Structure formats: structure tokens, C-alpha cells
Length: 241
Ligand code: F6R
Image 1 (spheres, rainbow, N blue to C red):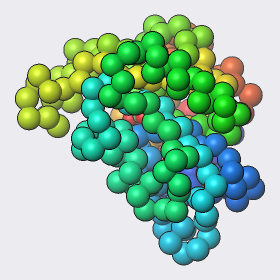
Image 2: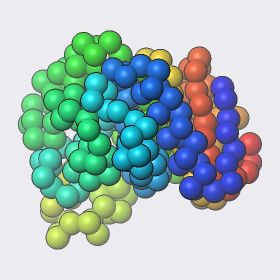
Image 3: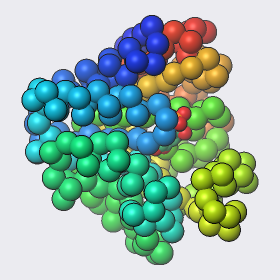
Image 4: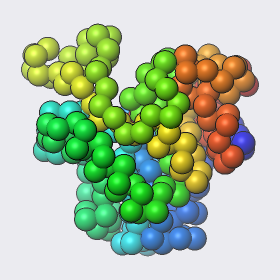
């Protein structure tokens, strides 16, 4: 495992973007595994900046996202597809046919999860998977006590997640109750993992995930078993390592 301790969020973002762009330059038709959330926004900004300067070409890149809310379509501003389009896909020369996000509008969970797994497989697997880290150690929507061998599946969102998300919707009824997520088994098959963490509120969980016991109670602790993990964090998030 390689750890890069960077000064702040901006330096963390630059380093993570450096690593992703190295992958794109070395293998122009690579498969990037992508994440949403607040942590990767700066990383995507850097990739867009370097694309605009002419240093990066996404024309052959393929992407697979970790997760999506069930019941939200791509045009809903709370959907993860919308997020990705806003921060990356709509700003670089990626071919939208090469972009993959679970289809939140497919009501048949079994069908959609099987389709997504098959897609990842058809693409030849993920070359590098970008991950953020939840305060409880979750990766993707894999909450504590998810089995480590799960593949893409449909999860029921916890009460606290629904509660936390309701501020983004007109009413609580509109908050999605379920989501599709790659499973830990799917994530662990990526050739490389790039985890990014920022802020002092992540310090405790970073320590638990990377220095504590490997346990489903802390889903990210499974990454200790992956042969190629790169952890990029700012000083505050990595201060307990
Ligand atoms: C996002 C995702 C989540 C986030 C995690 C951290 O696609 O799957 O696991 O990576 O919740 O979120 P932030 O970056 O907002 O702290």
C-alpha cells in the first residue's frame, strides 16, 4: 500500500488527479471506476483543467460508477449520473456511450445488478477504482456488516441516510429508499484502488480502516487485503496513521 500525505484538500485533489491521468496516458482505453460525493469534486476539477489545457484525452476512456439511487433518472439533479455529468462527463471529450452508471430507473433490481456486473466483466474489469470513505467506513453504498463477497446489489438506505438526504428534496417522500451499488467483491476485483480522504472528521475512520482489524463492521478495512491500494489524503485525515 502506498500512502500520500498531502498538505490540504487542493493538494490531495492534485495528487489523485495525477494518478488518474497517469492511468489515462499509459492506457488511453482504460476503465476508470468513479465515485461521487464531496471528496472527488476537486479531483474532477483538476482532470477537467488538464483536459482543457490539452494534456488529457478521454476519447477512448471507459468509466463505471460505483452506485446510483434507485428511482432517480439521469436528469434528476440528485442522481449520481447528473453529478458525474456536471463535474466530469459534460466537461471532457468522453464518449457518453463509454460511460456506465447503474440505471436507477430499472425497477427490476435483480436484472439491473446482473446487467451491471456483466458490463464490468465485458469491459475487462476496472483498471483503477476511485473511492471515497464514509464516516462509518462504508465504500460505495456498502454499509457496515455487508458481506465482503457481495457483487452489485440493491441496498435499503438506512433511516439516518434518508434523514440526511431529505434536505436535497422537496419532501421526505421524494427521498430514494434504495440504491444500486457495486458490492465489495466487485470493488476488490479492480486492478488498483485509489482512495481519497480529506478533513479531520475522517481521521478516526481512516485509522480504523487501515490500522485496525479487517472486519465487515468497517467495510473499507477489506482494502488491507488488496494488493494495490493507493491512499491519498490531506494531513488532517491522515493525522492518526
Ligand atoms: C459515492 C460513494 C460514497 C462516498 C462516501 C464519502 O459514490 O459511493 O461511498 O464515497 O460516502 O462521501 P464524501 O466524499 O461526500 O465524504
